[in-house]
Length: 266
Image 1 (tube, rainbow, N blue to C red):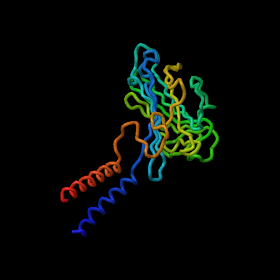
Image 2 (image 1 turned 60 degrees about the horizontal axis):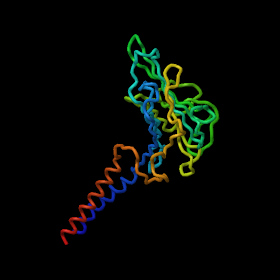
Image 3 (image 1 turned 45 degrees about the vertical axis):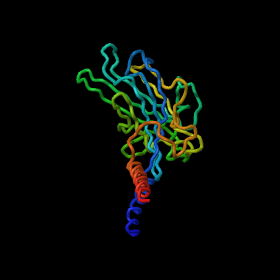
Image 4 (image 1 turned 60 degrees about the vertical axis):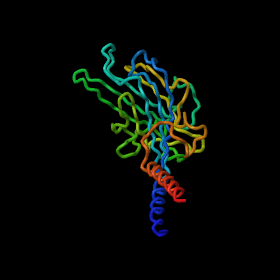
């Protein structure tokens, strides 16, 4: 009998090891912004700004996503004369403490994610153009050396280049604007040194900025998380569980049921 007990125990150990290799942690720093800031234009009214960073227990690039949530989806409003909207997400990685985000310039931030949306009155179709620009320099990894200059991120080749590749970096999903900048943006110093990915966002239609989030400063990847970020931090935003996490749950359940069976036999 003891020989046969080795098989299920080996199976459980394999599941447990597999789950540890696949555990990942998402820290989605976010701040909410009161509605009504954009003169009643819901598609320019920012209600939330997110800087989401996913860390993995196995070697890989951290996944970084920038997102702004609007009060409503972008739709043509016949009461205004502007049929195009601009959304900009300004990113700082050098631990800037500048709280006057109403006067943003590239001496404060290092990256600007942009998405423009234009309406064609003849076809009734909205078209998007988006880009990610490094304004002064970029890093090839956390704490690595700077590459000076202004460059555009090419999501196809996953590299910076001197001209705009005109490849879509941003995406409109319902009432959100999302930029996946994985592999493009890194901190000035490695995790644990206090340096973070942080940002603010603006929306406008025509030539006029209609909303700015946040007026009071930056939102970073650790906002609304535990005071001291660590690899065992509980995610603050719901997400689908990974395969490793599911295996972890199965492992715990099997161990618990085995204990119950053993106690009953006694």
